Structure formats: C-alpha cells, structure tokens
Length: 176
Image (cartoon, rainbow, N blue to C red):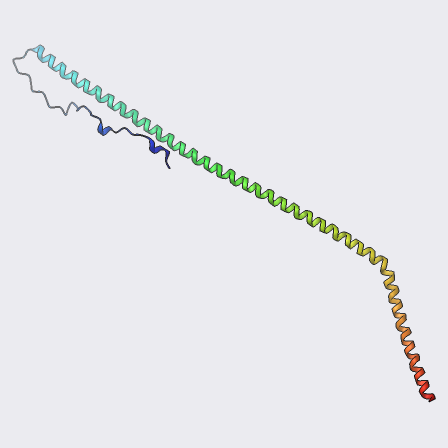
C-alpha cells in the first residue's frame, strides 16, 4: 500500500567508528631519559591522532545528519505523494458520481418530458371529445325535448284511448 516502503535506510550499526580519544588507553609516560624533542614529537603525534579521530567522527556525524535530513525529506515526499494519490482517487470517485447523477437527471428529464407529452396528447384528445359531445348535445337537445313532449302526448293519448275503450266496454255491457 505504502509506496514509501522501498526507501532504504543507512544502517549505522555496521559502520566502524574510530574510538573516541577517551576510550583509547593512555600511552605510557615517556621514560625520563628521552629528550624534549622526542617528547614534543610524541605529544604532537598524539595530538595529530586525536585531531584525525575527531575529523573522522565529524565526517561520520555530518554524513549521518545528511542521511537523517534526506530520510526526513523522503518521508515528507512520500506522505505528500500518498495524499496526492488519495486526492486523485477521491476526485475520480466524485467525478464518476457527478457523471452518474447527471445521467440520472437527463434520464429523469426524458421520462418526465415523455410523460408530459403523452399527458398533453391525452388531454387534447379528451378536450376534442368533450367538445364534440357538447356540440352533439347542443344539436340533439331540441330533439330530446321534442321527444319528451311527444312521449308526454303519447302517454296522454294512450290514457285517453284506454279510457275510451273502457267506456266502450261499459256501454257494450250496458247494452247487452
């Protein structure tokens, strides 16, 4: 997962360090019969050895500090790279989600438009049919009224006819 695991670290435990001047055994004191020049040469040689040891220690410490700084820099770059990849992944997911949402909206809009068009056609057809029915009613309303009048007259005539027949039957019965 972590791309930073490939970083290599310097293992300082395997490097050989020169012992510190305090760790070196003390050289035995020069015998008293040596000359001042010999003593001075020995002291200078000892001082030179200490300076060389200190320079070597300084060099190793400088390299260690450089390695630590480089490690810190690489760790920061690794964290930044990881954050960048996460941000790209999140951005890709958000873009995909946005595209899906837009596609759904387009599809919903198309369905809504289709339903609206179908409803409009049905309303138009219904409006025309209603208009035709109103027109038919207006045209046939006088006929319906005339029919009602005729039916009333027919009922009246039927009643009169029945009354006449009844009267004739009564008269025939009386004549007999």
